[in-house]
Each structure stands twice: as structure tokens, then as C-alpha cells.
Length: 127
Length: 283
Image 1 (tube, rainbow over the protein chains, first blue to last red):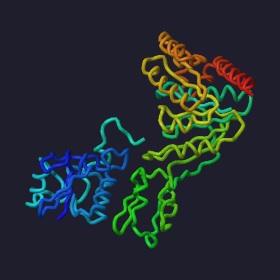
Image 2: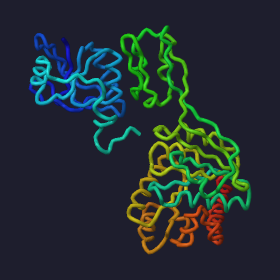
Image 3: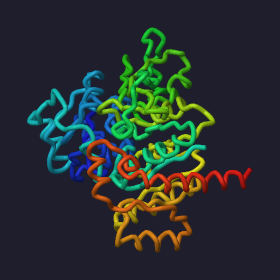
């Protein structure tokens, strides 16, 4: 099972990032053999629509599940229409998050748990 | 002749100056007033036009023909605003992110994208005495104001004296408004905040190569802040409107400054005369 985890850096021991569209790094992990790949989040510095850009990227990479802290409504709708499951409440490191996912303790999100633009840095606007 | 009235800082008196300028000029000849502050148009509160026309203004949004689409993803790749997401068997469109450029349609090899329309606001026209009045009213919640500003400017009559009330700030909506003007009046208040934003506005109009001059509104004992700046930057200080309780009281009842203080009209007429003088020299 190939899953994506929002991370602050590119290793299994990196801290997870609570933001979806604006997390600096995406860890793509095969949960069966723990083979992993770190990729920079293409949406991280986007002037707008970051969540959609990140979601599109993960759809294109054919992940089967996405593990997030918070996710907004637009990115959530992309995953729902693509049939990709989204799990919330990640904490600690990427490794710990994968472990929680394998034990089945991460809650499946049925809707966005964050308003739009929540991951934007203060003072930046899309205009 | 097109005169834009801008400010940098909000609430310095753009509409007070623009409405008074239009009313003063209307005594000499035909004038039109364009309120390009489409997010919060307020010129009508002072000029009280009788409305003659109202119509929606729309922008392009992509509509996907599923039977033609091969889900290649090209439209999502070229969209700078991420208004499209292409899934294996579906294309999602996020109209609120779309800037209406039509790039997705242009680059679609399958010709699967057609033009849909999204209403961003309304264009309204009326007559305030002899002043032709045009303004835009942005739909509540809409983020994209520049196409509506463009529609207001396109609906202006050519070749008559045009006074444009600009939005505050120095970003896209103001640039869209001020571009193409023959002169930009920058209204400021004599405060550190007013000065700070005036300096930004001067930089902006210089970038646009529009000649500008400064009007101090609510002029008083702190004018030297603005005077020093104007001297240093060699920006003409055109005239001042004193802080005047009666004008403020009239304003709160929707009465323009020159209606409350008719003697102020000479300031506006002298300014217009000086511009026309320059115009003649240039041509």
C-alpha cells in the first residue's frame, strides 16, 4: 500500500507537518516493505490553490491513502472524487505515523477538518 | 482627459476629491464619473445618480466536455492558479480560483473545454445631474475585481473629461484603474500613515508613467510631513482641503464637500485649468 505523509523533512524520522498544501515535504511510503521516497511538495510555495496542486500531484503518483494533520475542503474534494482515502490526526515522526496507520488507529476523514487557506503564512495573500 | 483619483491609504478622501472635482468640472462642460472601487463603490452616495442601466459582468470559466476529454492533465498543468484537477476519470474545476484567462481551453488538444460564464458583479450606469455615472459592484465573496474594473473603464464614453475614483492600496485593482490615465491625483492625509502609503502610491504611478500630484485632505498642523516629502521627491503639491467640521457633517449626510463649501470649487477648477494648460503646451 503506497501512502503519502505530510512531513517537515525527507526522512522516516522527520517530524510530520500538520499542513497539507503547504507542508515542505511529502514522504511516499510503501507500508508493506517500508520502501520510501521523499519528494518536495510542489504546492508548498504556490501563490494559491496549494492544496489542489498537492492533491493533483499525489493523484498522479497513484498513492492509495494520504495521512495528514489538517486538510482543507478543495484538496479533500479532489481525493474524494479520486477515491483516495484520507486519514487525519498524524503526530510525531513519519515512522510513528506509518506505524499508527498500520495498527489502524488513525481516523478516516470523511470531510475537510480545516478551513480554506489555513496553511498560508501570515501576511501572504493570493492577490 | 482622464484623471484618476488614488491614495495608497484608504479613507483619505478619494471619493470626496473625485466627487468634488466632477461637480466643479460639470459647471464648465460634460463630465463622466467612473467609480472603479468596485469592492466598495461609494461615489453614488455623494453624487446620487439616477440609475438607467444595470447588467451582470461575467468571466470565462472552463466547462469540460467529458466525451471529448482524454484526461491528459494538460489543463491542470498549465493553470497557474490550480483551478483544475485532473483525476483518472474526471476533471474538477474550482471556479473561485479561476482567473478566466482561457489558457486551459487554448492548450486543450482534444478541444474538450468550452466557455462557461461566472458572474463576478454588476455594471451600473446612471446620470447625476449632467454627470454620466458608471460604477461596478463586485459580487459579495468574489475575489477577482480587475475584470469588473475593466468593464467599467470600457463603458466610459471617449473624449470627455473623465474622473475615476480608484480603489485604495497599490495592488492589481489600483494598477488596472490608473493605467491609461492622463493624470493621477493622490489624496493623502497629513499623518505618518498617510505619508507612508502616499510614498508607495507615488512609486506605483511612476512605474505606470502616469504624471501625478498630491492633494492634502484634512489639512492642518501636520502638513509639513507631506510638504517635506513632496519637496524631496519633487512631486507637485497641488492643493489642500482643510479639516472642516461642516464638510465632515455634510459628508455623513451624503452631501459632497463642494456642495457644503461652494468656495472650494475654485481649487478644483484651478487644478483643471493648470492641467489643460499643460495639455496645450504638450500638443
